[in-house]
Image 1 (cartoon, rainbow over the protein chains, first blue to last red):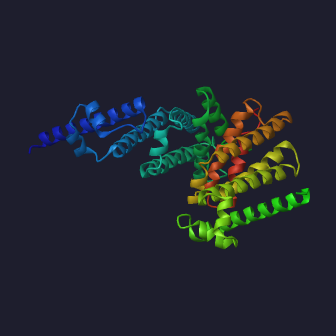
Image 2 (cartoon, rainbow over the protein chains, first blue to last red):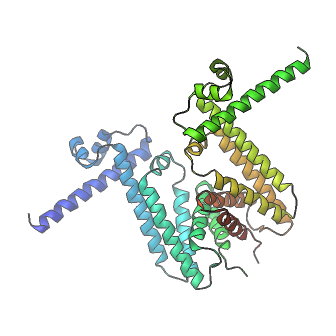
Image 3 (tube, chains in turn cyan, red):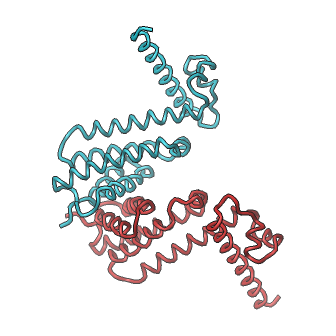
Length: 189
Length: 189
């Protein structure tokens, strides 16, 4: 087959896959996790049930794939936020705020509890920790972040402190949490 | 029955109960969670299986009761640590260190994952948060702790930040975590 034809098939497959993930997420949001079936997802996506099974073996596989897409889009968003520039400390602040707001929005749902056990989440957490650690190293070099403790430990402190965001009542409270967390990172005099 | 006799029976029941909890915990530590049976627990405790069933319906109930006892002993320990005195900030530091060391010791076991879903844990968490909040209020009054944010939010920040202790490699790292967390609580100039 010519290359163009392969690309068209790939693009088609990606589109079906993406549409399936969107449908599944919409159905879960509307009806809750327990009642979702492969037939409903196929119908909502506008494809046959047999076709859906060529893409995914079951509902859980669809939800995990959807969550992987979410997580990777969140990480992409944090990279964008960092790349908007500023001093290392300003970049760190912007990234921690963006991360805390994501945690705040996606708190404690039934779906989160199911999906956060996956290996892809552990991988994303490691990736995120390295990302924050690199910002802390840059901040320590520019003298804006404490350099008396290992950046790995400080990254772990940040990420754990910000998990508080998921139980906070408002965005304003999320910003205050980031302020307090950053205060812990200030160079010591 | 005379009062003394009732007290003797009560004391006996408490002793059997305590011995049962100890046995169950020892068995889990030795053989893992999956393989523990009521018969083994009865044997290890030195009582009959029928007697054991008069106290607890199943293994999980025993483990939950054991965990409630653990949690309440941990809270008692934190109260003792606070009552050793010092300024409010010193008391807070001692309590946060004691709490972080407890988290560090009891990290991520199979048993913890099972037990931490219980309602008694949610209750203990609320209790602990109030306890930390009161220390933060005392610290704000004495000018040693920031008073620009609500003590409830700061307590939540503390407890979430210190959950990092469970994945830290050493006690030294736990003390550093408490130092950084406390730095976030310093009054702002």
